[in-house]
Amino acid sequence: MAGSGERARHWRYAELPGVDLLRAQYIRKTFVRHTHEHFVIAAIADGVEVFHHGGSDQYAGAGSLALVNPDTPHTGRAGVPEGWRYGAVYPAPELVARIAAETTSLRGTPGFVRPVIEDPYTVELVHHVLRAADEGNALAADTLLRVAVTRLLRLNGGALPRREVRTAGARIAARARAVLEERMADPPSLERLAAELGSSPFALLRAFRDAYGMPPHTWLTDARVRRARRLLDAGTTPSEVAVAVGFTDQPHLNRHFARIVGVPPGAYQRERKNVQDARRRLLLPSDA
Image (tube, rainbow, N blue to C red; front, top):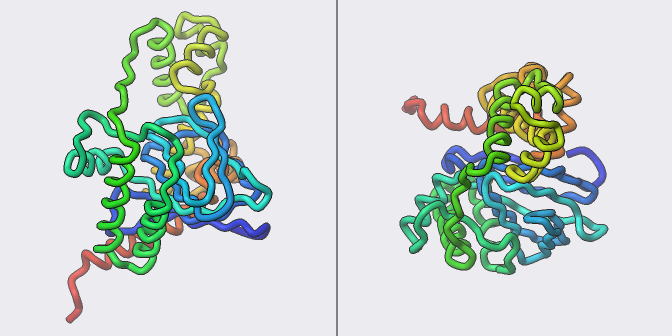
């Protein structure tokens, strides 16, 4: 990242499938309300991160971990003038579930109970995972990741409640989400969407916020960035991705992508291409 003392790298390691990796230092960076499809395990090395989660601000300082379950709305910003430096791993829910089944007594869908815990040992484990991935040490990266996830589940794990759509408002919110997902590139206005669903605009707005923790337009931006990530992973150019997901142009995509993912889409895609190239090299037969 250019200037201002901020830097970030968001990447994958071919030998850790289903896991995103991040190493970053942010000072003025602000993450807007968003969600992740994967778990967030963020190990704070220096400074303080503040993130809004579950209706209140959470503070994660050096030696602590910020933990966010999949599909959970949250934000992020600096809690002190010097910002915060951290490393993070984002394991897929399926991987966490397999680790939980093998190493803990948790049953059902596992997750984290508290969003912040102090545990310098696991903070070091996370940073060692990132270092091993950087060095191409697959055995260490995989082992340390599993040890870190197991420790966090034992310290702070629980079975996540299943979301069930029961109320009329929740059912309308789910239908609205489906419409926005299908018509992402050309979504209706709130009034038109409410009319299509037999609701009023404010009733729909309340129902959607209750169900998903954010208003429809914020959820749509988050969903667009999620889809943009998948398209970038598949090799689609950022300019084509912007149009495909409904942003007006590439700068529009760049702005929202960086505010949610933490790096611009071009840098994100370059790291993904490096991983794909590494996988191809692993699959090619030796010339010897």
